Amino acid sequence: MRLHLGVGYLVKRATGVFGSAVREPLLLMVVAAAAILVPLCFCLTQKLNFDRRIGELSFPVYLLHLTVILSLDGPLRGLLTGRWLLGESALVCSILLSFLLQQLVLDRLESSRQLRIAHRT
Image 1: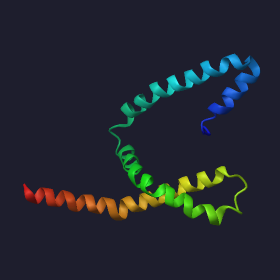
Image 2: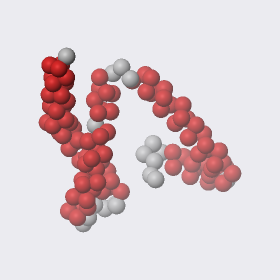
Image 3: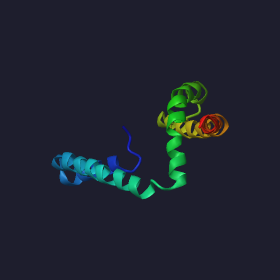
Image 4: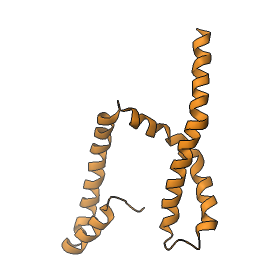
């Protein structure tokens, strides 16, 4: 797995400088930091409307990502210099399409569902 925050590079450099004995402790510190920081970030952002909207995109991204990857693989194969660019391109397209799906379909379905629930009571 390629780590976007430079952790892989940091571990590689530290291993080169200090030897292979630091690899596992350093990776363990990264996992421990993530275990602490992820819940902390959740606590700090749970009341933000923007954060809730990002969270709502997880289901549409889940629904669309494989289709986007398969759709981009053929057309972009000759254009991309690195194979990892397919993943990056698929990520951007999946998020954009998920946002559109959320706005145009899922939000409207949720609004009509809420109206039906309100009329029942």
